[in-house]
Image (cartoon, rainbow, N blue to C red):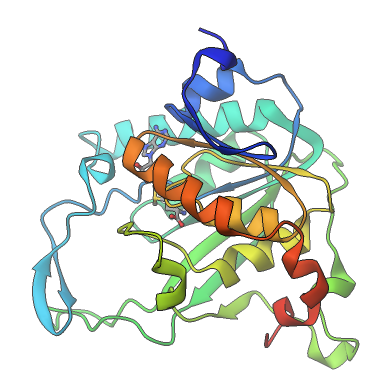
Length: 271
Ligand SMILES: C[S@@+](CC[C@H](N)C(=O)[O-])C[C@H]1O[C@@H](n2cnc3c(N)ncnc32)[C@H](O)[C@@H]1O
Protein backbone atom coordinates (compact mmCIF):
# COMPACT_ATOMS: atom_id res chain seq x y z
CA UNK A 1 0.00 0.00 0.00
CA UNK A 2 1.22 3.53 -0.76
CA UNK A 3 -0.34 6.94 -0.15
CA UNK A 4 -1.68 7.13 -3.70
CA UNK A 5 -3.80 3.99 -3.16
CA UNK A 6 -5.76 5.39 -0.20
CA UNK A 7 -9.14 7.03 -0.78
CA UNK A 8 -8.88 10.79 -0.26
CA UNK A 9 -11.36 13.57 0.43
CA UNK A 10 -11.09 17.35 0.51
CA UNK A 11 -8.98 19.36 -1.90
CA UNK A 12 -5.33 20.05 -2.76
CA UNK A 13 -3.73 21.56 0.35
CA UNK A 14 -6.35 20.10 2.71
CA UNK A 15 -6.60 16.35 2.26
CA UNK A 16 -8.33 13.72 4.41
CA UNK A 17 -7.30 10.07 4.04
CA UNK A 18 -9.85 7.33 4.78
CA UNK A 19 -7.41 5.36 6.89
CA UNK A 20 -6.31 4.23 10.29
CA UNK A 21 -3.92 6.93 11.48
CA UNK A 22 -1.05 4.60 12.37
CA UNK A 23 -1.24 2.92 8.94
CA UNK A 24 -1.22 6.35 7.31
CA UNK A 25 1.67 7.72 9.38
CA UNK A 26 3.75 4.65 8.52
CA UNK A 27 3.50 5.75 4.87
CA UNK A 28 4.51 9.32 5.62
CA UNK A 29 8.16 10.43 5.40
CA UNK A 30 9.95 11.09 8.70
CA UNK A 31 10.17 14.69 9.93
CA UNK A 32 7.66 15.99 7.38
CA UNK A 33 5.01 17.58 9.63
CA UNK A 34 5.16 20.97 11.39
CA UNK A 35 2.38 20.36 13.90
CA UNK A 36 0.03 17.58 14.98
CA UNK A 37 -3.35 18.39 16.46
CA UNK A 38 -4.92 15.21 17.86
CA UNK A 39 -8.32 14.69 19.45
CA UNK A 40 -8.21 10.92 19.98
CA UNK A 41 -10.96 8.61 21.27
CA UNK A 42 -11.39 9.39 24.98
CA UNK A 43 -12.69 5.80 25.62
CA UNK A 44 -15.80 7.36 27.20
CA UNK A 45 -18.37 5.07 25.63
CA UNK A 46 -18.52 2.60 28.50
CA UNK A 47 -22.26 2.58 29.24
CA UNK A 48 -22.20 5.69 31.47
CA UNK A 49 -24.85 8.43 31.39
CA UNK A 50 -24.98 12.15 30.64
CA UNK A 51 -27.67 14.81 30.22
CA UNK A 52 -28.77 15.73 26.67
CA UNK A 53 -31.45 18.41 26.14
CA UNK A 54 -32.47 18.01 29.78
CA UNK A 55 -32.86 14.18 29.54
CA UNK A 56 -30.57 11.49 30.95
CA UNK A 57 -28.95 9.73 27.96
CA UNK A 58 -26.35 6.98 27.63
CA UNK A 59 -22.85 7.99 26.54
CA UNK A 60 -22.26 6.31 23.20
CA UNK A 61 -20.15 8.37 20.82
CA UNK A 62 -19.46 5.45 18.48
CA UNK A 63 -17.73 2.07 18.46
CA UNK A 64 -14.44 3.89 17.81
CA UNK A 65 -14.73 5.39 21.31
CA UNK A 66 -14.95 2.06 23.21
CA UNK A 67 -12.08 0.92 25.40
CA UNK A 68 -9.81 -1.65 23.79
CA UNK A 69 -10.44 -3.88 26.82
CA UNK A 70 -8.27 -2.55 29.64
CA UNK A 71 -6.34 0.56 30.69
CA UNK A 72 -3.15 -1.24 29.70
CA UNK A 73 -4.41 -1.87 26.15
CA UNK A 74 -5.68 1.71 25.81
CA UNK A 75 -2.28 2.97 27.00
CA UNK A 76 -0.44 0.67 24.57
CA UNK A 77 -2.52 2.19 21.76
CA UNK A 78 -1.68 5.73 22.89
CA UNK A 79 2.00 4.82 22.85
CA UNK A 80 1.62 3.31 19.37
CA UNK A 81 0.10 6.32 17.63
CA UNK A 82 2.20 8.87 19.55
CA UNK A 83 5.40 7.03 18.57
CA UNK A 84 4.46 7.37 14.88
CA UNK A 85 3.42 11.00 15.38
CA UNK A 86 6.85 11.69 16.87
CA UNK A 87 8.54 10.07 13.87
CA UNK A 88 6.68 12.23 11.32
CA UNK A 89 7.11 15.49 13.27
CA UNK A 90 9.94 17.81 12.25
CA UNK A 91 12.56 18.40 14.98
CA UNK A 92 11.05 21.85 15.54
CA UNK A 93 7.48 20.53 15.39
CA UNK A 94 4.98 20.37 18.22
CA UNK A 95 2.04 18.16 19.07
CA UNK A 96 -1.30 19.03 20.65
CA UNK A 97 -3.45 16.33 22.19
CA UNK A 98 -6.75 16.74 23.98
CA UNK A 99 -8.42 14.56 26.58
CA UNK A 100 -10.47 14.23 29.73
CA UNK A 101 -9.38 12.40 32.89
CA UNK A 102 -10.29 9.15 31.13
CA UNK A 103 -7.16 9.25 28.98
CA UNK A 104 -5.16 12.39 29.68
CA UNK A 105 -2.90 10.75 32.27
CA UNK A 106 -2.10 7.91 29.89
CA UNK A 107 -1.39 10.45 27.14
CA UNK A 108 0.87 12.54 29.39
CA UNK A 109 2.79 9.48 30.55
CA UNK A 110 3.08 8.20 26.98
CA UNK A 111 4.39 11.57 25.78
CA UNK A 112 7.03 11.66 28.50
CA UNK A 113 8.00 8.01 27.99
CA UNK A 114 8.60 8.72 24.29
CA UNK A 115 10.85 11.72 24.98
CA UNK A 116 8.42 14.55 24.24
CA UNK A 117 8.66 17.64 26.45
CA UNK A 118 5.34 19.01 27.66
CA UNK A 119 5.35 22.77 27.06
CA UNK A 120 1.89 23.56 28.44
CA UNK A 121 -1.08 21.79 29.95
CA UNK A 122 -4.02 23.89 28.80
CA UNK A 123 -7.33 23.83 30.61
CA UNK A 124 -10.18 24.28 28.13
CA UNK A 125 -12.86 25.64 30.44
CA UNK A 126 -16.41 25.19 29.12
CA UNK A 127 -18.80 27.90 30.31
CA UNK A 128 -21.79 25.77 29.25
CA UNK A 129 -21.19 22.16 30.46
CA UNK A 130 -24.00 19.59 30.78
CA UNK A 131 -24.91 18.96 34.45
CA UNK A 132 -23.67 15.83 36.23
CA UNK A 133 -26.58 13.48 35.49
CA UNK A 134 -26.37 11.32 38.62
CA UNK A 135 -25.45 14.18 41.02
CA UNK A 136 -22.59 12.11 42.37
CA UNK A 137 -19.69 14.37 41.35
CA UNK A 138 -18.78 17.93 40.44
CA UNK A 139 -19.91 18.98 36.97
CA UNK A 140 -17.21 18.17 34.43
CA UNK A 141 -16.50 21.61 33.01
CA UNK A 142 -13.11 21.29 31.33
CA UNK A 143 -10.92 19.26 29.03
CA UNK A 144 -7.12 19.31 28.95
CA UNK A 145 -4.88 19.97 25.98
CA UNK A 146 -1.25 18.93 26.28
CA UNK A 147 1.16 20.84 24.05
CA UNK A 148 4.52 19.14 23.60
CA UNK A 149 7.75 19.55 21.66
CA UNK A 150 10.10 16.73 20.66
CA UNK A 151 12.36 17.58 23.62
CA UNK A 152 16.19 17.53 23.74
CA UNK A 153 16.66 21.24 23.04
CA UNK A 154 14.09 21.38 20.22
CA UNK A 155 13.20 24.97 19.34
CA UNK A 156 9.48 25.24 18.81
CA UNK A 157 7.37 28.00 17.29
CA UNK A 158 5.38 30.18 19.68
CA UNK A 159 3.82 33.23 18.00
CA UNK A 160 3.69 35.22 21.20
CA UNK A 161 2.64 38.49 19.55
CA UNK A 162 -0.18 36.92 17.58
CA UNK A 163 -1.96 35.36 20.52
CA UNK A 164 -1.26 37.94 23.22
CA UNK A 165 -2.46 41.52 23.50
CA UNK A 166 0.33 44.15 23.42
CA UNK A 167 -0.31 44.74 27.14
CA UNK A 168 2.20 42.54 29.07
CA UNK A 169 -0.29 42.32 31.94
CA UNK A 170 -2.77 40.72 29.55
CA UNK A 171 -0.87 37.55 28.60
CA UNK A 172 -3.07 34.66 27.58
CA UNK A 173 -2.91 32.06 30.34
CA UNK A 174 -3.13 28.28 30.20
CA UNK A 175 -6.86 28.48 31.02
CA UNK A 176 -8.92 28.99 27.86
CA UNK A 177 -12.58 29.74 28.40
CA UNK A 178 -14.27 28.80 25.14
CA UNK A 179 -17.91 27.91 24.50
CA UNK A 180 -18.87 24.58 22.97
CA UNK A 181 -19.44 24.34 19.21
CA UNK A 182 -21.79 27.05 17.91
CA UNK A 183 -24.68 26.06 15.61
CA UNK A 184 -23.08 27.75 12.56
CA UNK A 185 -20.16 25.28 12.74
CA UNK A 186 -22.55 22.33 12.47
CA UNK A 187 -24.23 23.31 9.22
CA UNK A 188 -22.48 20.65 7.14
CA UNK A 189 -23.49 17.62 9.27
CA UNK A 190 -23.25 15.92 12.65
CA UNK A 191 -20.22 14.58 14.52
CA UNK A 192 -20.66 13.49 18.16
CA UNK A 193 -17.43 15.02 19.45
CA UNK A 194 -16.80 18.03 17.23
CA UNK A 195 -14.38 20.59 18.70
CA UNK A 196 -15.02 24.35 18.49
CA UNK A 197 -13.04 26.10 15.76
CA UNK A 198 -11.98 28.82 18.17
CA UNK A 199 -10.10 26.27 20.29
CA UNK A 200 -8.18 24.65 17.44
CA UNK A 201 -7.56 27.99 15.76
CA UNK A 202 -5.88 29.40 18.86
CA UNK A 203 -3.64 26.34 19.16
CA UNK A 204 -2.58 26.51 15.49
CA UNK A 205 -2.18 30.27 15.42
CA UNK A 206 0.13 30.07 18.43
CA UNK A 207 2.26 27.15 17.29
CA UNK A 208 2.52 27.23 13.48
CA UNK A 209 3.48 29.61 10.67
CA UNK A 210 1.72 30.42 7.42
CA UNK A 211 2.47 27.64 4.89
CA UNK A 212 3.19 25.03 7.61
CA UNK A 213 1.83 21.49 7.29
CA UNK A 214 -0.60 20.40 10.03
CA UNK A 215 -1.60 16.77 10.58
CA UNK A 216 -4.68 15.52 12.47
CA UNK A 217 -4.63 11.73 13.05
CA UNK A 218 -8.28 11.71 14.26
CA UNK A 219 -9.80 14.17 11.82
CA UNK A 220 -13.51 13.63 12.63
CA UNK A 221 -15.59 16.46 11.18
CA UNK A 222 -12.46 18.26 9.96
CA UNK A 223 -12.23 21.11 12.49
CA UNK A 224 -8.42 21.10 12.33
CA UNK A 225 -8.55 21.18 8.52
CA UNK A 226 -10.89 24.16 8.54
CA UNK A 227 -8.75 26.04 11.10
CA UNK A 228 -5.56 25.25 9.15
CA UNK A 229 -7.02 26.40 5.82
CA UNK A 230 -8.45 29.60 7.29
CA UNK A 231 -5.02 30.39 8.75
CA UNK A 232 -3.20 29.70 5.47
CA UNK A 233 -1.65 26.40 6.68
CA UNK A 234 -1.70 23.12 4.74
CA UNK A 235 -3.52 20.11 6.13
CA UNK A 236 -3.50 16.31 6.13
CA UNK A 237 -5.96 14.26 8.17
CA UNK A 238 -6.68 10.59 8.85
CA UNK A 239 -10.19 9.36 9.59
CA UNK A 240 -11.56 5.82 9.87
CA UNK A 241 -15.19 6.54 9.01
CA UNK A 242 -16.17 7.43 5.43
CA UNK A 243 -19.15 9.47 6.65
CA UNK A 244 -16.82 11.74 8.66
CA UNK A 245 -14.34 12.02 5.78
CA UNK A 246 -17.22 13.31 3.64
CA UNK A 247 -18.30 15.74 6.37
CA UNK A 248 -14.72 16.99 6.81
CA UNK A 249 -14.42 17.48 3.04
CA UNK A 250 -17.63 19.56 2.93
CA UNK A 251 -16.41 21.74 5.79
CA UNK A 252 -12.91 22.19 4.39
CA UNK A 253 -14.19 23.07 0.91
CA UNK A 254 -16.52 25.71 2.39
CA UNK A 255 -13.70 27.37 4.37
CA UNK A 256 -11.83 30.31 2.88
CA UNK A 257 -8.07 29.82 2.48
CA UNK A 258 -6.28 32.41 4.60
CA UNK A 259 -9.64 33.96 5.49
CA UNK A 260 -8.74 34.32 9.15
CA UNK A 261 -5.39 35.99 8.49
CA UNK A 262 -7.24 39.27 7.81
CA UNK A 263 -8.89 38.91 11.16
CA UNK A 264 -6.06 38.03 13.54
CA UNK A 265 -7.46 40.14 16.42
CA UNK A 266 -10.50 37.86 16.20
CA UNK A 267 -8.43 34.90 17.37
CA UNK A 268 -6.65 36.74 20.19
CA UNK A 269 -7.37 36.16 23.87
CA UNK A 270 -10.87 37.50 24.19
CA UNK A 271 -11.72 37.17 20.50
C1 LIG B 1 -12.74 12.63 19.09
S1 LIG B 1 -13.13 12.44 17.41
C2 LIG B 1 -12.34 13.84 16.65
C3 LIG B 1 -13.27 15.01 16.43
C4 LIG B 1 -12.63 16.16 15.70
N1 LIG B 1 -11.62 16.81 16.50
C5 LIG B 1 -13.68 17.17 15.29
O1 LIG B 1 -13.59 18.34 15.68
O2 LIG B 1 -14.59 16.79 14.58
C6 LIG B 1 -12.12 11.11 16.96
C7 LIG B 1 -12.29 10.67 15.51
O3 LIG B 1 -11.24 9.75 15.23
C8 LIG B 1 -11.74 8.71 14.42
N2 LIG B 1 -10.84 7.56 14.70
C9 LIG B 1 -10.88 6.71 15.74
N3 LIG B 1 -9.87 5.85 15.69
C10 LIG B 1 -9.13 6.18 14.60
C11 LIG B 1 -7.93 5.67 14.01
N4 LIG B 1 -7.29 4.62 14.53
N5 LIG B 1 -7.46 6.26 12.88
C12 LIG B 1 -8.10 7.32 12.33
N6 LIG B 1 -9.25 7.83 12.83
C13 LIG B 1 -9.74 7.28 13.96
C14 LIG B 1 -13.18 8.53 14.84
O4 LIG B 1 -13.95 7.98 13.78
C15 LIG B 1 -13.60 9.97 15.20
O5 LIG B 1 -14.23 10.61 14.10
